[in-house]
Image 1 (spheres, rainbow, N blue to C red):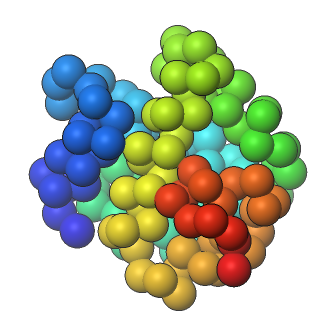
Image 2: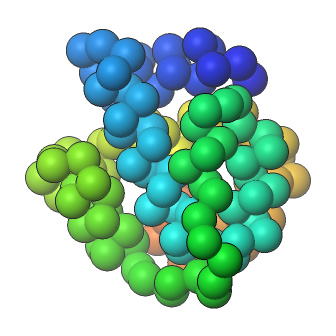
Length: 128
């Protein structure tokens, strides 16, 4: 998926006012996701996303930080300056677009590293 299409989908799903807001939210959500999964998984996902969004998934090497969905949304809220409920909307707009952009196999592998409660953020009823 090309950058313009990715951002258009996120902007539509998140009902953002402009591209700058859409890019900011996308980068924030992807950065928090990168800290939640292994560096290898983040790199594999980054390879399937358009530049410069892929850069948000490249963090310093280290193990994943196994925080729950509530903490994930709290971190997104801190990055975006949003309220927790808005952070859930933001995360869903970005992660459901990630699920569209990446291969099904990549998304399944990514979801296998996350608790079941993350499924709906990716637009899926379960993490199967």
